[in-house]
Image 1: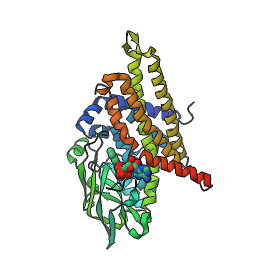
Image 2: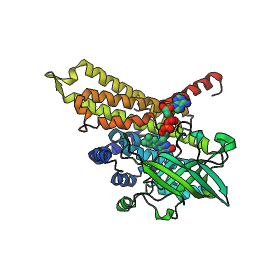
Image 3: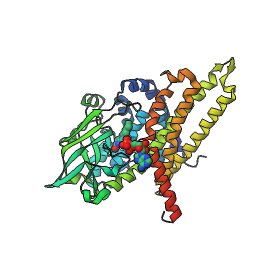
Image 4: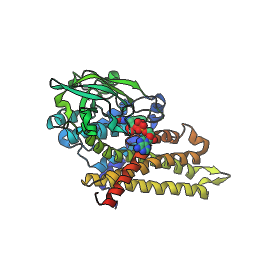
Length: 406
Ligand SMILES: Cc1cc2nc3c(=O)[nH]c(=O)nc-3n(C[C@H](O)[C@H](O)[C@H](O)COP(=O)(O)OP(=O)(O)OC[C@H]3O[C@@H](n4cnc5c(N)ncnc54)[C@H](O)[C@@H]3O)c2cc1C
């Protein structure tokens, strides 16, 4: 018996795995090559309810627990990280702040659109000079006549082009430092109406009129996650009605810190999926290949590599599932989420490189997915808190425990 997963979890894992192998694997390389957003599969995943996996049913979600949601992220990433981050960034970053900090009116208005996958969401925090140091936010919101005028630019925002609903941060009172940062819900029309209309998700007419002054900027040409949409999100004298403020003024920083804590479990699960995908390719290859007239599987060096890969995946899986279990049981989970993210993200890089080495030149080509997995893995050590930031979070929690203030 698995200590974390029950029969429903196992059935969900099998369902997502089957979908990923049948519907994503054949097209993942092409989407990566073309840096093309996978609209058809977004529609298929929306039909399965995966954009609202752990949103309560009353807001249009599947009402599943955190572990179920993590299994979806993990299994998608085992085949393709871009598909996985599409669900993860939408759910944890775009939707969960509204679910956790929104008024009932905000939840009623935005969650059903997001949870059904009819519209994609995102989260605008990072700015030039304000990534790890998110408190250095320069975007400013000034209250005037019952609305806020927001000016600034957010960079590297997942779904800034294809998405329509965003949570963004802005300074409302600079004299209060991070306690002067506030969150807002803003909307903009997708940059790809043609695809959205073709597949029937990605655009909601009822959001019109969209927030004036919000638009997508330049699309990034990235090393990995190439089928995921990453762009600037520009706020140019954006007029945001006061009822779109998310939480009280000054609560934005603490709320997005909590959002990122949860996001780290998601990136941990995505990294775990990548680490598993690289391993699966390596073990299948070694099971069949022959070198020097002998089965590769009999070479002790190969066996040692595969054993280390499998053992470290087991460690990562325990860390990720444990952090998810803590969260779904309302226990503190911040340092555990950081450990899960840090270990799994560094492992997915390590495993992809071990897999490429084991396959030799074949692993360096697009005939196998491991070169893509290596490129897709690198951002897991950077996004939603770099490895250095995770180490700081973990170290601070150690000293809180030592000081008796944990
Ligand atoms: C594909 C992609 C998708 C993204 N999606 C989103 C999104 O949807 N929303 C969003 O808001 N952002 C998003 N980001 C931005 C991402 O979260 C940031 O890139 C990340 O937080 C790091 O910030 P930075 O790039 O400014 O690096 P910096 O913060 O400038 O860090 C540079 C280096 O300095 C190190 N460093 C910084 N501070 C410390 C310290 N105190 N101690 C030790 N070392 C330190 C870092 O670890 C890193 O190695 C995305 C980025 C990418 C590439």
